[in-house]
Image (tube, rainbow, N blue to C red; front, side, top):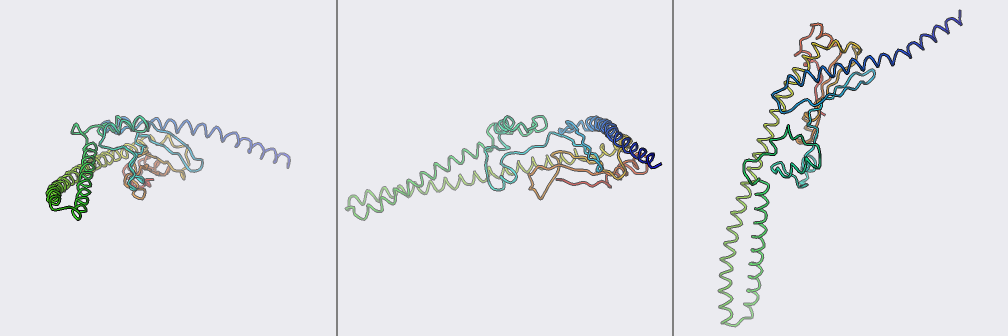
Length: 301
């Protein structure tokens, strides 16, 4: 009897050990199918947005749940922004310069030319960055002229102490001309500072306008994605039956989060955590799609 019990326990252990890979294989197939359904559903229902669902990757964490990673082509960094930008580091790239953006596309391979084509367009033939560069060169020239005039004034004042009467008249006449030249330079410098401030204000206005447009587009895209996401879960969530009720369905939308603690320009992901139990309740009609979204944990990281 004892020998038979040992054999029975051994058989059950062997059977469970053999069943685990088969269960994971079946789960992998089910989750891949669900990923394909999500990809098809989200790609077809968000046609009017420049942001597109490029692909969806699926990962299963045992005893925790499934992770669907949605690639929208927005997982990127712009050099000179974020932490380095806050420190004032200029890496030679600028959002107002098409040439710089094209160079970044070539070097970084992270820029989505289809989604961000508007960043390659400027209203004027000369970009604001180039205009600021020109003004900086003018400021440099004026500063040089000012230094030369001031240096010559000091030389004349020193020479006046030892000059005779005739030479003093010549030096005083030259000094009067230098005073006029310096006055003109100071006026030009003041005018140039005003032009520079105006260009910088226009640049800041355009960047703020572009940010507002992108934020609005992001909000519209996420709103549409969320509605279609929960609708897909409620309609086709039976494909997740292989998951345990206490497991989670995690959805990561790459690059479309908003993380204040990492800086306004820091790139982050939008993360949704659904309960398998809540999804099955929605499949059975006990929970509405909008309620399913309310029950989810949503955050950026």
